[in-house]
Amino acid sequence: MKTKVFADGFEGHVRRSLDRAAKFDRGEPVKAERILTFADPLHMLQCLTAERIRIFQTVKAKRLSVSALAEELGRNRGSVTRDVNKLKQFGLVRLREEVNPGHGVVKIVEPVAAKVELRSEL
Image 1 (tube, rainbow, N blue to C red):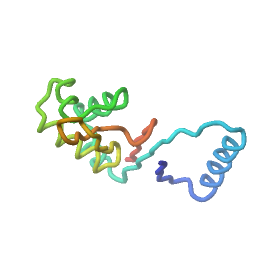
Image 2: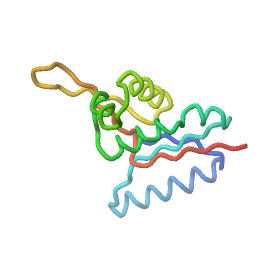
Image 3: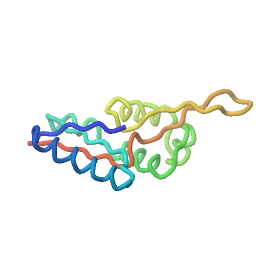
């Protein structure tokens, strides 16, 4: 999955498309990435807190359930759930359901892409 918002117009889009097409032609893998551009820096600050950055860095290294993530970070499960939902709202993580044998279903938190770039302009 690749979602981007750019300000360089049609010319930049064509250049990026040609670069990706050349990689496909050479048989090189194209990693999923996400670039979020915030029109207002205050919205970016709503998304980024120290704890949310810790959550993102942790799930980027290894996919964990919300409970395991809370334990890993030494935080309350409810607080982690709220932060995960906020990161999901901004499109930085997703929740995937996985069968937990004998215990129902567990939600696994994972990043939406291998690379995430956040931009804002003052």
